[in-house]
Each structure stands twice: as C-alpha cells, then as structure tokens.
Image (tube, rainbow, N blue to C red; front, side, top):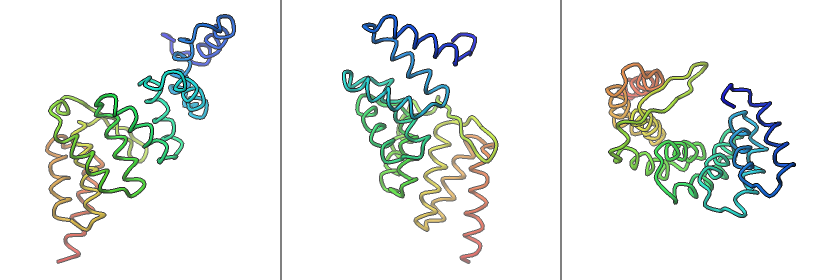
Length: 194
C-alpha cells in the first residue's frame, strides 16, 4: 500500500482474510482499499457487513456514506452521514451532508449544516477539495460552506443575501473559481431584477 499499488494490496488482503478468517481487522483494511479504488458497491457491501457487528465503527460509516454519495444515492448517504456525525463532529462530513441535502432540495436542513460549519471555530484551519468542471481546487471549508449557503439563497430568490455569502467566500479565498462564477450569476440576477 505504501507504493500505491492498490490492486495488489486488495488481492493480498483478500488472501490474508481467507488464510486467517478469524482476524476481522483485515475487513477494515479492505474497506479502506475499496473506498480508495472507487469500488463503491464493494465498499458498501463490506461496510454494511462490518457495521452489523460494529455499528459505531466511524471508519466504515464514513466510507459507506461517501460511497453512497459517489453513486448518487443521496438519501442513503445522508442516513450514514447522520450516523457518523452523531458520534462526533467532522466538518468535512458535515459539509458533504449539507451538499447531499441540497442535492435533494432539503434546503433548510442543508443551510442548518452550513450554519454549523460557519459557527465552528475549528473550521478556520481546515481545507476541502472542491471539484468544478474539470478541475480540483483546495479551499477553506468556511469558503466552501459560504458558497453552498449562497447557492441555497439563490434557490430561495434571496439574491442580495446570496451575494454577501459569495463575497465572504471570496474574502477567504480570492481564487475560489466556483464562488467567482456564482457571484457572477447572482450579480446578473440582481441586475436583471432592477
């Protein structure tokens, strides 16, 4: 695994599981490999198996939630994000939960999680990767949350408030491309409404 050869690592772990079936810790390794390889269906199946005996295993809950989200099964992703967040706060997972809620147009819930991120003092030091079109960009999680909040406010036709959110996101990271584009959109909507 230290050389990044995940297919070989996966095969080796499966062989160890067959050789030592009583050692359940190999399942924990295998689910991490499945998640890293984008084998989301396998990660979900194994994760749900692990969670039958260890229902509070945060690693498995996290990987299953991310896997469901990557497969577009947002209602199941939300279910697992809620379970893992009940065990402890994780701003990355809270942001992912808010994104899934927004994806299902559960705007009030999504904004509630945006507000929790904005109110968390530890959020100032954390970053997140945001994919936009064909690029990835690392931005402060506060900027990402403000951008998402602005998008929700656009949906609610609160364009002035949305503009403030995008402006605040850009104060945290002036190069945040998605927030720049959203600011242009809301500025156009405001000009159209005048």
